[in-house]
Amino acid sequence: DVKVTQSSRYLVKRTGEKVFLECVQDMDHENMFWYRQDPGLGLRLIYFSYDVKMKEKGDIPEGYSVSREKKERFSLILESASTNQTSMYLCASSRTGQETQYFGPGTRLLVL
Amino acid sequence: GESVGLHLPTLSVQEGDNSIINCAYSNSASDYFIWYKQESGKGPQFIIDIRSNMDKRQGQRVTVLLNKTVKHLSLQIAATQPGDSAVYFCAETSWGGTSYGKLTFGQGTILTVHP
Image (tube, rainbow over all chains, first blue to last red):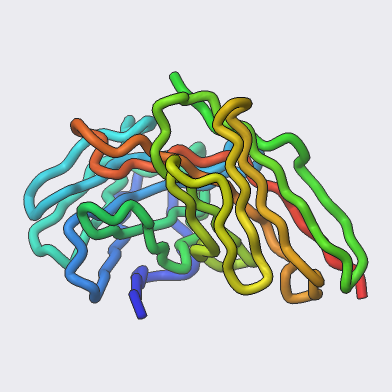
């Protein structure tokens, strides 16, 4: 079974802090994605990566950056957290040529 | 831009009934459609998928129907059980070019199954 893990289930941070959200997948997938999920807005794509050290902006990249130094790991970085970044963050991965994305359990981030 | 949407935000059914969750999409170039189930506190889980060259696909207790003429997708759950209570999302992608399999998600439908 595909396993996607995220470093934290719940996180509380203060405005202005730098926040790292880590995602690891164990299926050697080429593609990895970061989404945020908010009530009434569904899943929105922040960034994705189709290869090591490659990254592409999604629909809402502002305020975020990403890092993919190894194939299995994709990190989402909030350089200076703001209250409007309070959300559920979901990581997903997929194999090139197979469009199904497999999701991690999510990290619920609260920025005070 | 293109979007995927759902007709009904909530659906309540009795245990044992059949459930139908609907989804409309607007991208006529969509190649591939997926249904996900998201239980409270968890990430979305893959349920079933269908390609644009098919109009029906069946899984275990679930059937997905695709009507490309009216750009409509539905998920049918047979003999719905309390464990089916969750939010259901449809998603679509048009593979090719530089899309890298990016999915566009609908808003989600909350399915509540009453014992």
